[in-house]
Structure formats: structure tokens, C-alpha cells
Length: 577
Image (cartoon, rainbow, N blue to C red; front, side, top):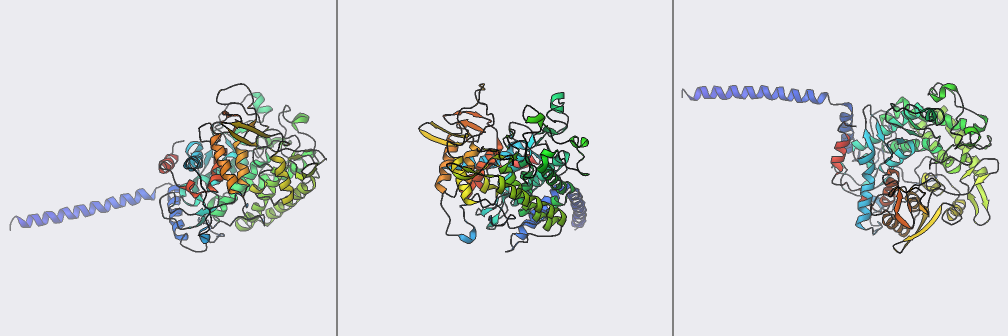
């Protein structure tokens, strides 16, 4: 008994010590968790909130608070300017239409290639930065193009039937329409960060089309004085579509997260306001108009001089060819191919402006409560749409009424199409409310030998034809000095599939794209239609992302996460950049 009593006291003392130690440990854990960075806490809260909301039948798309909500994406329709485009047609039916699914026979290597393409942008070209920013470069060029970066993340924002069972972070998914960006808070952080970074770049200089990650590059005198390169600006080619891609990215993200805090960021709304003012000023480019206001305080804005570029690329000492200031259209110095415009009013880009101004009007109403900006956007939208109807449709002797690629509003026009998007082929894809007969005629012209950029070829007994580009395409594999003959751009073939409602045509295009990839199963910039081993730009993620969009419209198998997904995401958020 004398031994038992000390043992009992010993057990009591040990228990007390362990209890106190456990409390200290819990406090330490609590204190540690309390100092997690804001992004981690917000991501965890978003994931929990997402799971709660997905159990509800009707999700509210309009929420006044800054808390993140997950919206039900509107089904595609081109009846109003405020809905997503009708193309690409999703052949995977919604859960409400079960029993009507279309079985599309795609080979396994097509699904694998799509999965690789879908995540290639995140894996190889995405940098998650501090200050809630994200930087996405093009691939083999380590700069951020406003157009390319937004297009590269676009597959994450598309509405589609969510027929697979789990989200990408492993949590259960309830069937319904949704987007990939809704399935993982880290994807939400990546895209919202790109929106914020892009807005800040536009705020830095609204005429630039590409930017560097850092501003420490030493530009020479010609680059600074003639090419406009300075600080963060990689290239200063004013391309009308660049701002459009930014607004489209915002709107699609809004459809998934209608009350996301990124829309309350001062720079985001300012970027939209700046682009609208630029588009209005460039309606009168011929009159040397320049946008004015406190927001135009950039390096190039300080002198209040109209945009001028290298005289070797734009005529009249860098001003470009003459245009009609009363045409209603807005001017662009360069095409989405980065080539200079022959005539200053690029019709596909003006159509894109009409579409995204509709998106701005909705954001003004639902988020910013800005009736003045909404009226300004609507006025500009109506003027440009009228200008397209008046000047953008021309009579062709064989095809009838078709859309011109470029016009000057003075009676001159250019009839052609180029593989880079926006182009005339992509009109349904970008969501413009086109005249069906005019577009049908235009499409017949585009996919014919009358279009100087339509090329043919044959290899391994496979005949192939498709849209190329007037952009200089240098052979990349063998480093030969010359332009690729009979060049076809995968982007052109992909867009042909994206605007088609014919499943067989789409499947055929997917197979041809893979056979012409020179065994890489990645989309190049361009290739020789007779010798696909001659290609340009092996690492070109814009084309990869478009390819993923095409395959996803046929099969949801592509959406399944790869075994490297979690490792990839962990690496992106490791803090190393």
C-alpha cells in the first residue's frame, strides 16, 4: 500500500503535466493558424463556402457583399449582348438532359493530349506572385501578352456540364453546370490574380500589348524612342483586341464569382474606364485625338501626343493609313497576329469590342452601380455596331455579301482572314450578333483558295487544309532561314472546329491536329502542310488552350485531373517565382 499511494500521486502529476502541455500545444497551433497569410485563409473559406452553396438548387448571381459567391453560369445564347457566346457548342449534355448524351469516339491519345494542353499553361507559364497577382507568359517568349494570357486561362472559365464526381481538390462535386475555376480555390486565386495584374498593366500604359515581369531591362534608344518600350513594356503595339480579352476574362470570371473582391479593386474598374476612353479617342485617330483625364498619367501619356509607332511598320510617319473619323469604328494599329493593319479599322476586333461593351454594361449595373459608365459604354457600342453594318459588309462577286477583314471607312477594304483570333472565322465564338447569311458567305470565302491565307498540303497520305497567317512564321525545328511554305496554323484549324456544330468535323480536325504535331502532341504556332516537322514555336500555350477548348466540347474525359495536378498546384503556390 505504501508503494501504491506514491504511484497514484505520480499518475495524477503526470496527467496534470500532459494536460497543461496539451493546452499549450493547442494554443500554439491556434496562434500559428491565426497568422496564416490572407490568401490561404481566403482560399479555405472559399472552399467551405463553395461546398455549402453547391447544395442549393438556385445560386444567386448577384450578391452585394465582398464575400466570394459561386454563381450558376448562364447557358450560352447570342440573343442578348450580356450572355455568353453560343459557341463552342458543348456536345456533353447537362445533368437535366441525362439520357441524351452524345457519345463521341475520341482516341485515348486525343484525351491525353487535351489533358496535357489544358494544364500546360499552369504548369509551364504561370507565376503566382505576391500582392494577389499572377503573371502568365506566352511560352517561349517570357513576357505577358494581354491577349495570350487571358486566352490561356479561358478554358478554366468556360461553363460546361460537370459530369465527373470530384472537384480538382478532391472534394465531392454535385452535378450541374459549372466551370473549372469553381472547382479549386487555387484556380480562383490564379485567375483573379491575372485579372488584377492585367488591370495594373493597363493602368501602366493602355497602348501596350505585352509586358515584362520586371522593369529592369535596359532598352536601347531605338527601342525607347521608336518602338515605345520602357519600364515594364515589352512591346508597344496598340492592338484593339488586347483590352477586349481582358474584359472577356473579367466577365467570365464574374459569371463564376459574381461578388468576388477583385471586382472591388480600384485598378480593375479603372482599367475598364481607361480602355473605353482609349477606344472612344481612337474613333477619331485621324484627327489625332488622345484620351484625357487624371488616369492617363503614364510615361507616354505625359506629352498628350497621339499614338505613333515605327514608320517602317505604320505609314505616314507611324500614324497609319488614312481613316474616316465619322465611321463610328475604333482604330487599331496592329492585328492579333502582331502585324500592322493595312487599313485602320479591324472589323473582327471591332466586333469583339461590341461584345465586351455589353459585358461592361452588366458589370456597371450589378457591381459598380455606375450609370454614367454604362451609358458611355452603350453609346460607344451602338456607334461601333452601326459602323460595322455600314462599312464592314462588302459585296463579293462570287460569295455575295461578306464581312471585310479591314476597312478605312473611306471605301477601301481588305478581303482576307488570318488564323489569329479574333478573326472573321471566330465571329460566333467571340459572341458577336452577326447576320447569318453574311457570316455563311464569309466562312465559305475564308475556307477557300480565294483567301490568300488558306493553304493545302498532304503528308503520309493525309490531305490537310486550313487557315494560315500573313504573320512571318520561321521554321523553328531546323533553324532554317525562311518562311514556312503553305503554313497552316493549328489555331485556324481549331477555330474551324469551335464554330462548327458538326461532331464528325470536329473529331476529324482533332485527329488532323495531332497527326500534324510532329509527334509532340502539342500545338505549334504554324507548320508546313506538306512537312509538319517544319514548324514554328513548339512552346505556344495560346494554341494549346484553344485545343483544350475544342476537345472539351466533345468529351469531359479531358477534364479529369492528371496524376501530377496536386504536385503542380503545390509548386505554383510554393512562393518561389
